[in-house]
Amino acid sequence: HAQQQQQQQQHRSAVLSRQQQQQRAAAVAGNPQQQAELQHRIKKEKETFLIFTRVLMKYLEQKDPNVYHRVKAIIKECAERNKRHEPGFESVTTSMKAKLKEVVSEAHWTRAEAYLKHFLKQKHKNTVAQQQQQQQQQQPHQRQQQAIQQQARPSPPPRPKKQLVKVIGGFGSSDF
Image (cartoon, helix red, strand yellow):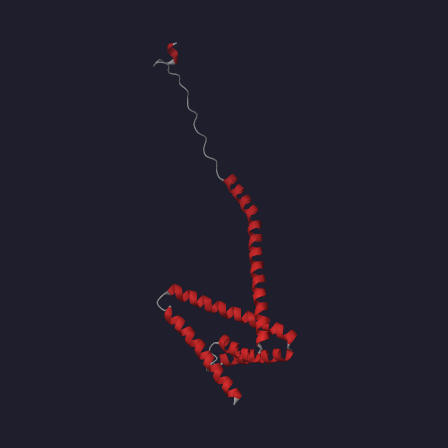
């Protein structure tokens, strides 16, 4: 009986999530830019949740192996039920999140979120550092390229020398 209630609750939360997504989509239906932003945001949320599940799994593997094995089975089950297009599993991330929250304690969930936040912060720092390093490496290369391009440019043709003709008071030089 308790398991049936849990399944109903999962289905309700999945339906609510789908309804929220549909409402968001309807709100931006007329605006292609907003649609693209919404799709990008949903994709980013899914990617972040997938990274979170990896972090959670690593954490549980070390701290609570029993829960780790249950979570692993839940992830597999959600993926399979999603592939079979079962009701309540249209969004694998939504169904997975609901089922995982039932099994994982609040303390483990919060700790995994903290690790995720730290991981993402480190990843961002590394990305920024790599970009700066690439820019620094490219700057001397760009200067070199500019110097080469300047050397390769054809020099302008020499200007014709102006002939200096002395004209004094309207007389030519032969008048002197």
